[in-house]
Length: 298
Image 1 (cartoon, rainbow, N blue to C red):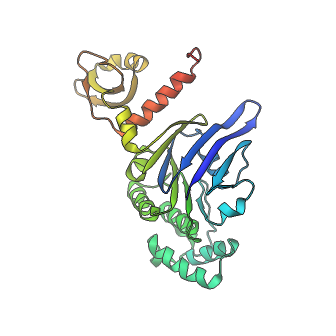
Image 2: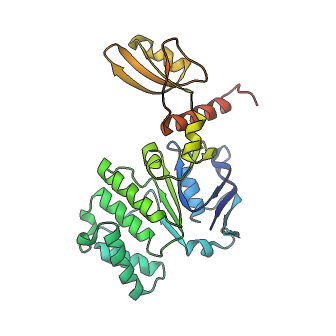
Image 3: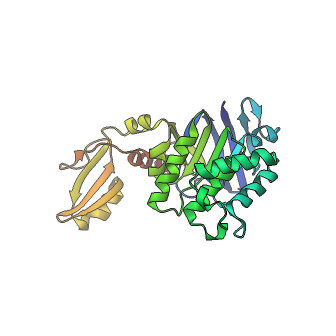
């Protein structure tokens, strides 16, 4: 089982590109698609799901062009879009029965599948409640349930934890981990902790381009010995930000503790710190911005 994205671009207007020459190979497990808002993640998800047409390039599912034969991918696809909506007057069971019918699933087997999924997403006790009374987290769990109706080989979740409280986010991440198994799960988000908790592979996206693609351990090694911390006076914080790639700050009684990415010791009092995935993510974005800045070397 493999998904290949080959040179995919999406052009919206003469000077506006959602994606540029994006290529990526995805294997079973959880791929964390990580990037800032507006990076092109949702555009890529819609193209993979055959909802949006690419300007050029190919999506290959198990050796077959998904653009030429979309039904081969759609039949094994589960998709939770970022703007997933529900019919508020339908109960959870009615809503899932309706979507199962839309997907062309057998009514008898669908009823059994729906009961299994409601238990899986911890909504068995709410099965007959109207969706309009559900919390944001409960609606997201219904969203995952509908995406799993056809027991998909490819599951796409686009910003699934946006707007959820911390407890619901943890529950949702645990659910995705349980679902991974031998399927491909693509989790698109701008929240590093979501990816850090579940991803077996990470792709970092910025400005419609692939910036990095590696297992979490390799990304962490890329910033080993490049993360530094020291304390500066509050008055010097702006100058420090202008001079260095600052990943975080923490206010202290003696000043501001800054954490930066630098190839060499940035200040006499700076000490090395253990890198985090957020450091690796931000370092990739800093490098991409530097490379594409006006005047950067070609």
